[in-house]
Image 1 (cartoon, rainbow, N blue to C red):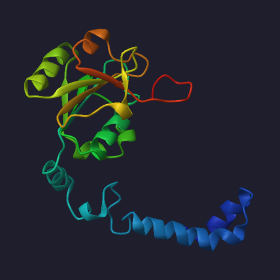
Image 2 (image 1 turned 90 degrees about the vertical axis):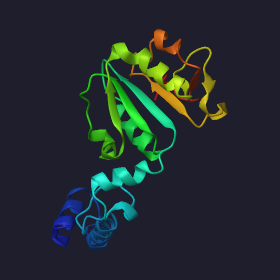
Image 3 (image 1 turned 30 degrees about the vertical axis):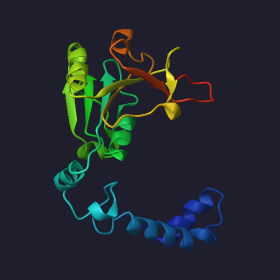
Image 4 (image 1 turned 120 degrees about the horizontal axis):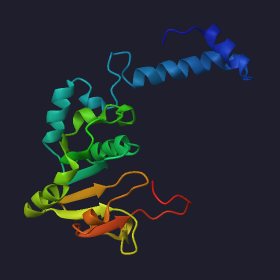
Length: 196
């Protein structure tokens, strides 16, 4: 980190914070920078044991232990939640992610996790064929949506092979797609928003 103690002290003073905290703050920031691997040139948001591997090798390493989880994200109107969904899919090391609709999406929120996920694309008109393909391979089809018949996520018994469909912000999942699903689950919440 190429910043002087004086610069940090000046910044702190300008923001109403005791400038004498500058050396300790700078030491903490430098330690954090080292911990994240930036000193070694690798600032990727991946586990330390993977840092020595190339992006392609990380992908291959993860491919050896992927779960039977397939995520399908509708991207017809907007991509507000797509990056977060891909990051979550990566966290669980799922089999693959399908983006249905527009190919273009804002990758900033994925924070690089899309490099380690098997991303695939399908046009909207092929959605039912996509669902049927996985069902024929023994997958259970689950929609993440709030309906009168949906069950809370924490009470649902998740199968080993599952394809989960996520709708778009505002539009959700069309009824024609919900009709193809084996189950519909929702995340129980206490706030005022209908979805997360």
